[in-house]
Length: 151
Image (tube, rainbow, N blue to C red; front, side, top):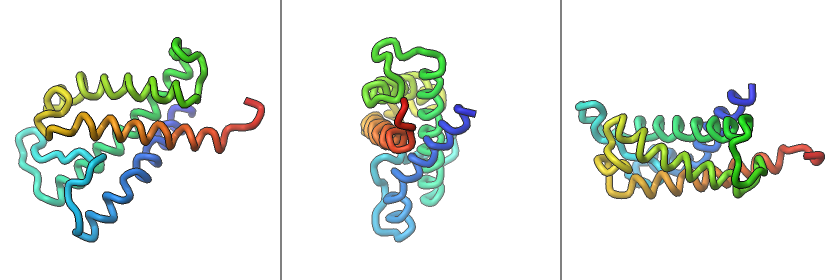
């Protein structure tokens, strides 16, 4: 149950982070906002303008859900060997950094984005770094707000 909650909270935080991009994209005022990866080609198929945003948003939400899931996996398995403090800002940042490395050097090449996402843009690595940092901070704030006082 903890894993489902973590993935759901990660998705919720990812959605909150993406709200400015959703609003500005819907109003047709701004395109290609940071924090959302603009996927132009997906497995050989060139995406249209609306599809680029939809796939980028979906990818952002999946990454957000996976970050929440990975963090709780680290906490449940006791893998926070550096901080030994679950749900602290330092442990959130550490897991976000490790997840960023895994995402950029394993997942992105596997799905065809190239190392650190260079096939989709020169700043994809930075967008994912900022996105995971902001998401980690928001998740930390949510946990601090809802965590019982006796922890």
